[in-house]
Image (spheres, rainbow, N blue to C red):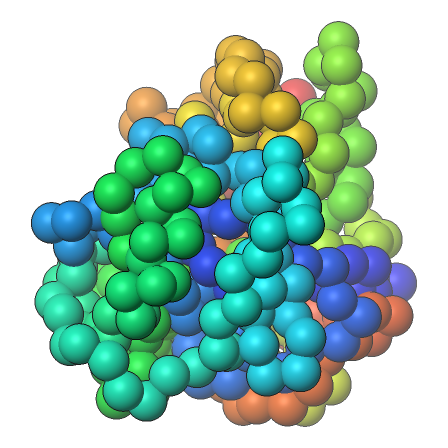
Length: 275
């Protein structure tokens, strides 16, 4: 039986995530997930790809607030509202998309700039902004937040276990920043999950997730290495991209929680038969 084993949300894009026991599924993904983002002064998104030190920021949710701390100075906190309704409207760039966002108050931007060591600012995606997923993989007119491209990412624990069996040093799941981790099934079962249900919500596996250098960054120290991309490229490489995990779209809303069973409705042929 397949079942959810871990759930993660990332309130601020590319900062540390939060493991939760349950999550609300909304139209653009899990509640709180990547609704905030850090940009440079040109309003371009910033991620660990270019600023590895972003990994040193931890996040937590306390009531209707997001608390950000730096691992080297945990007593200093930035307390953000989980959502804002007012703020300086700005047009921000995230990869190939332009989105409308609200800029955080100056004191918040000053705090994050000082602790990151780069002039930057925090922006929030309001409910009025509808950022569409890639129409090539859309089912309808699905939207996402400040995620890279899709609202939810899932990975099977068996897939990480299989990868770690090939590595000299095993890696934790946080290298891959999933939302839903599940147990059961065989390695890379998620590749084949075309449609499945968790409770009353239907999920669709629409595109394997191509991985970047963030997977090579130790999330505790920011040390960079060659793994796991070096090993994955040996058996999960296609068109110069390495794939690990499945991007999801969904229909419906409601709660999902650790322990919930996953019911497969339809499977598809795997793109990478396991060697």
